[in-house]
Image (cartoon, rainbow, N blue to C red; front, side):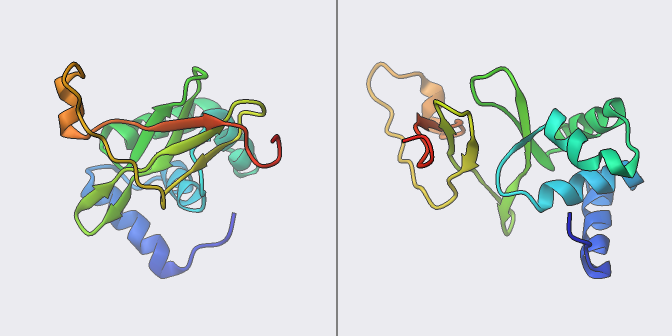
Length: 146
């Protein structure tokens, strides 16, 4: 994990305070780790990455749940019954959702932020699709497995 500049650390602290959370070492470590990721990570992945910092699994899990509850991170199950976490992507005051790609062979997960998925609600589709507040997941073979 790369060392964040004092300005970036200040932004992390401000983000936590604005969400009504206390600034603690484990919470800052979780946010900074997630900021450096290009794909959602599981609790187990996070624990492996931060084990050298001495944080226990329960503390990291509680912080992930707190961050998800206040809307700083998203929590997603991509069909394998494993919760994965990532920072909510924002453009100004707007939260930008994006589809995820899951390899059907090796299970690799990646974000597809440059992929646009247009949702058109058909006659018999649930009304909730009209809100466009849905999670999109594309499953196929990744380049390495194809």
